[in-house]
Amino acid sequence: MLKKTETQALTDVVNRLAERFPGEPRSVIEDLVAHEHSLFDESRVRDYIPILVERAAKLRLVHRQLPVTHPEPLRV
Image (cartoon, rainbow, N blue to C red; front, top):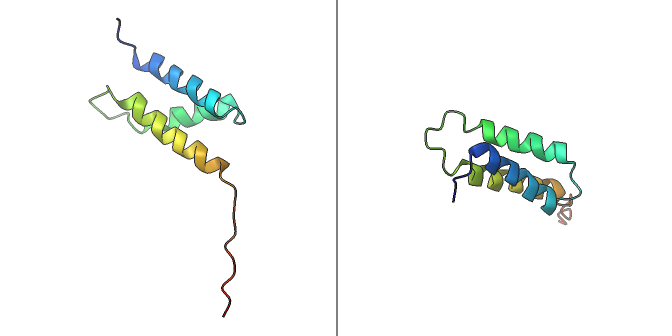
């Protein structure tokens, strides 16, 4: 089996996230993945970068979809 290139792996990340978050525009997901990937520009070990990028991007997308709730005011 051939090893995937980092670019191919990141394309797969975008595809998985687009499937999991159908309400998000694909361009937003692509930008988010690109941003997270750019944080690893100086990394020497590249094997796990797509996994780390996917995890970080997924967390950001989940937090974007959380409903905004306002806590009950404190009653004194």
